[in-house]
Length: 80
Length: 301
Image 1 (cartoon, rainbow over the protein chains, first blue to last red):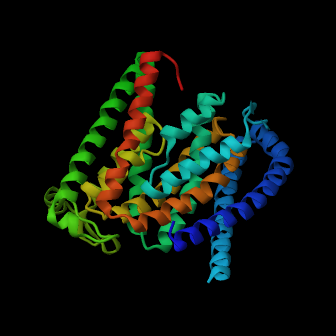
Image 2 (image 1 turned 90 degrees about the horizontal axis):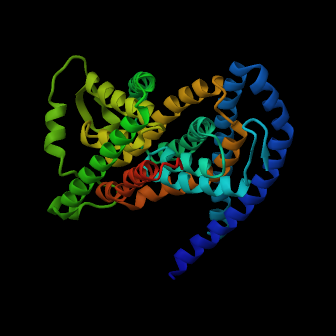
Image 3 (image 1 turned 45 degrees about the horizontal axis):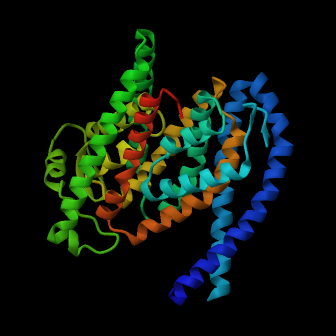
């Protein structure tokens, strides 16, 4: 394996490990704190639930994209 | 792990892995990946209505990540994306109405299965022919990474020459003039098949953008993803008010998709347009294989 490829793969594995830890913490936060509330919302207020669902998935997408970009920059900065 | 909204017990690791794999496909090809996500959710016991609605919600999140990355790479034509969103939503409604009509007639499963097999096989056959022909031509062999040439270009040019008012230009995509109706038609057809066959129908829209509208492959992938954000959000809202979305499952799946979509999007830089199109060929074939399996076995994956 070329040294550059090995370096990229190492950086990727490192990023994946940090990402995995953060996401695991996030799972418990979201599923435990929001689970019950979302369930109630889905039963009693469907339209609000639909709006909240879209906001949540877009919000998570923006946050996770920023997080992975930040991690990539951090790792590249360390390896250069 | 128990998900109270759908009442399903699903391993979060399974959801993350499925999301990751679909994320890579979405980021690289500009497709929603519903032909894999739907059966994958069904496989762990989620009801079909929840599988369809939840998959749409997850597609929204994944497309935001991939489209943002493609935008940073200069692969998104915002003007084209916004115009196409109108056609897609109208098409999706028309497709859904046809499904309702077929439901009333009592032959919805048979008709949808036959149409989907025909569509998937046609797309794959055409794309194999075109990308191989392009790659074997002198221009195709010579092009560098990121460049785009298509053996179907003469037909695309004649479509662009159709002067049906109003004509618009797409500077980001390098299209000097094309009829607005042609763009809306392509979007409508994509949306129609999305509403009729399910999912985002990126497997139809992405090739149509390349061959009919003459959009470079990299831009077609990025713009399709951007357009999917709008149309899938509409679909998610519509399904959520009908009680078909478990947003907790979608959020967990999306944690895997977020990183997969970035990998897929970055990978497009290392391939030429025809190679991306050739690699796209197995996707509709997988869709066709799933439909044939369900028809022959009588089981729904």
